[in-house]
Image: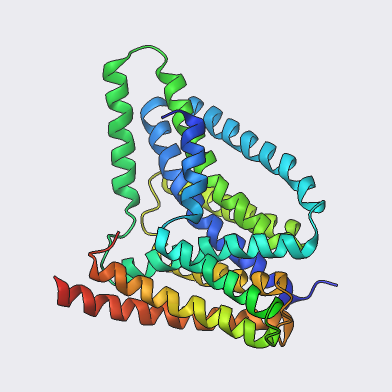
Amino acid sequence: MTMLEEFAAELIGMFVGEKRMTISVLAIVAATGSLVDFFGLDPLVGGAVLLFGCLILLVESVCRSSRAGAS
Amino acid sequence: MLTWSTVAPAVTAAFLASLVEVVEAFTIVLAVATLRGWRPAAVGTAAGLAVLAGIVVLLGPLLDRIPIASLQLAIGILLLLFGMGWLRKASLRAAGVIPLHDEDAIFTAEADQLSEQARQQQRNLGWAAGITALKAVVLEGLEVVFIVIAVGAGRGLLVPASLGALAACALVLAIGAVVHRPLSRVPENILKFGVGVMLSAFGVFWTGEGLGIGWPGQDLALLLFAALFLGAGLIGSVFARKLAAEFA
């Protein structure tokens, strides 16, 4: 692996540690944006969706990794 | 005007995150210096710092050209991914599901690799050692650069955040110069847990602002977010410990 490839892998690895959690975070952000922008949801309620979505996702991801023997 | 509630979280996050990364880079640079001498270690480190400075100089001005809402959203999402990734791993380490980061083991592995290189090729050893130091500094430094930009950009906090990172570098170098061995007694997982909490809190805050959400209490909302992420990380860790025992 060349040094540039290693740097690129490090950069990607910084943000894509666990694929399922990465996709879920992006889905929560997209859902929050859609609810606020397209469905007229109160921005504060949208904020709560974002915040509590991420908190629940974190606990779920830790538990799932633990059941799977971790990664 | 900058207030403590604005500056303190950014400086603290930059300082603690940098502390973790600099300790990791220092371990490898120390292995290089121990086996191949201080010259290749110093040259590799200086070259690595120059690469990082070049990245900051190239990317820094580009940030000013991005609309603030888009910048907040992009950085917020990246911070969420980065911070929650750290917090997830720190929770799993705290639960004993994955092993703790071991600086002594990393030092030994790096020293073994350099010794192996020495056996295989007697020429250009200084060059190989310098490259090893450069890679360590750049790879760990990339995370520091990202964190400084992420917590500092958008609110004129790049300088305070950079000072936080520099303070961490100075502290590690000062301690390293005295003890001359890997800093294995740094409570790395506690630091990573704390940094993961802060970066996740920043991530929700910036992502929300980028989506047009005005948080009540403005910057003080960060403290609430941090408390909630801390609680979630601890709860996750407790559950993980129980589940690991059940499934063992």
